[in-house]
Amino acid sequence: MSPFEPKQEAEPAGTSLRQPLKEYIAEISSLVMSELEAALPGEWSVPGNLKDAMNYSLQAGGKRLRPLLVIAACEALGGSRQAALPVAAAIEMVHTYSLIHDDLPAMDNDDYRRGKLTNHKVYGEATAILAGDALLTHAFYSVVQASRKHGVPAEHALSVVEDLAEMAGPRGMVGGQIADMEGEQGLTSLEQLQYIHRHKTGDLIVFSLTAGGRIAGADSRQLEALRDFGTHIGLAFQIQDDILDLVGDEGKLGKKTGSDLKQQKVTYPYFIGLDASRDEVKRLTEAARSAVLEGGFQDNTRLLDIADYLMKRDH
Amino acid sequence: MSPFEPKQEAEPAGTSLRQPLKEYIAEISSLVMSELEAALPGEWSVPGNLKDAMNYSLQAGGKRLRPLLVIAACEALGGSRQAALPVAAAIEMVHTYSLIHDDLPAMDNDDYRRGKLTNHKVYGEATAILAGDALLTHAFYSVVQASRKHGVPAEHALSVVEDLAEMAGPRGMVGGQIADMEGEQGLTSLEQLQYIHRHKTGDLIVFSLTAGGRIAGADSRQLEALRDFGTHIGLAFQIQDDILDLVGDEGKLGKKTGSDLKQQKVTYPYFIGLDASRDEVKRLTEAARSAVLEGGFQDNTRLLDIADYLMKRDH
Image (cartoon, rainbow over all chains, first blue to last red; front, side, top):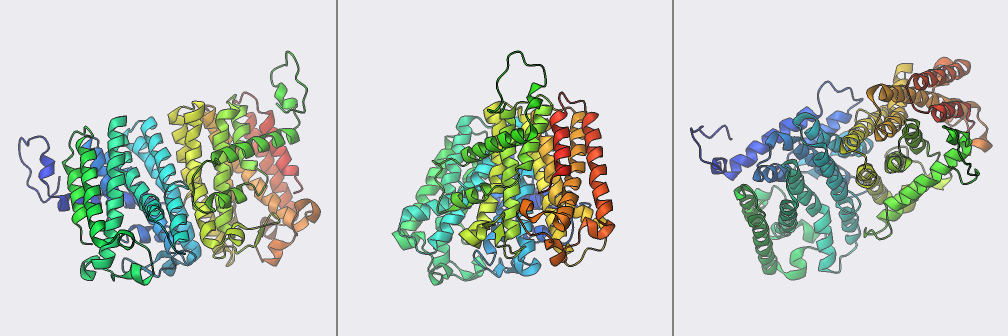
């Protein structure tokens, strides 16, 4: 419960849903930050500035969307927020490692991300590569802690490890990055763009939801619903990104619009136009809502709110 | 059993030990190669040349020492070789990823490894970074398959995941690489060199042994013995490397000697001299043998043979 909300006696079931989504997001974000800090403890003896480099990018902000999905999915099934936190931290480590490696000179060669210097601009390329490697490796350690510290059954934690390795690996996110890199030489079909969106960003979103579900002990029907929900909001999220890059408000986005055009990056609106892209976001959001409504969850309001929030976001 | 050895009726216990070590090593190496091929199956739909880049370095040869240790430790405790193979493949993936990233221009900037072009010289830097990332991630998937395909209890497989994440992560191998990188600006103490040896190479060797033990269901005393054995042979292995670089036979090594001197790389002989380094290898090998002899294993001959073999190797 948010510290801003007065505690009430005899609250009806589902009362936590009265907490506005914005507060819920802020609360989860703050808990995830604490979990990330605890995951790289001060007493760790790690040489040089490896830990600084890891922390620099972990603390560089961002939406914390993936950890939010882990917690929301877990809580939708009545699972423990505490038990989900190490997995929420893990997915943020994986997301962060992917950004560090993506920004490297050999890849996108970006000097800034979210208004801050990229990892290799601060710590040098070698340390940035190793900080990414260390975050990816340590993510798996963090997943195991859900079992060690919060009693998640080993069988469930092992399934989370398996899913993470699959969704972040060669058939998942890394495959999406390779496709994106090759696509920079010119995408010729919407199918290619969908492959990139599905794997480069979609797979970690799907993972976040099913991992939260697994921590809560989801059955196969619930896992399938979470997978559907994730697939749909994952693609909607990317199309919305493409739209915002075209017509978004630079002040709200915190970055220049039109960068896709300038970089001659092929996007959803390029293939099907702006209006059809907006319709597709709506259609996907509806499909995501249906998946959740039919998933047999204990409490689906938060996931429905998140789907709406992502569709309507302006940054 | 080796295909070169005639099958005998009513073999006495421990008869597999009659197979010469050299044949045992060749047999394990061939099984690990098959396991690695099966781990990246042909029907996988992975874009571009990501899979080729992964396979290129996996198949580039090397001693396959780490997989050998996984299998030997597992068999020393009466465990199943089949169940240990996915973990043996996993450690080879992790070792291979570390070499790919280590060779990058931003790191050691090597054009050749084991007489073949390095990964980034063949596939380009971006793909090499991603192939390394994919191998590291897929290693965790492979560990889980020991449970999925060979019935290793989830609790044991999860411990292997935890150990791998710890020993290959920021407090383990990656920490050793950072220390090594910084050491290139000049090491001033034997302690610093020991830190690098212990983490950069030692930790994966220790992991290989305890992982094999965990697959076989080792108790805490046996795990401790495997850890001791690994710590000692790991350091002995590195000191022997340093010695061979000074006085080895270039024909047998397959590389030029004296490269440490030329690169002004500080080594064990630099700090304590050649004779004392040789004595240290002997002392560590004896300590490793003692750990195994007191470990309460079902069959310790193979591990003892491996310790001797590593000490006496000339390449």
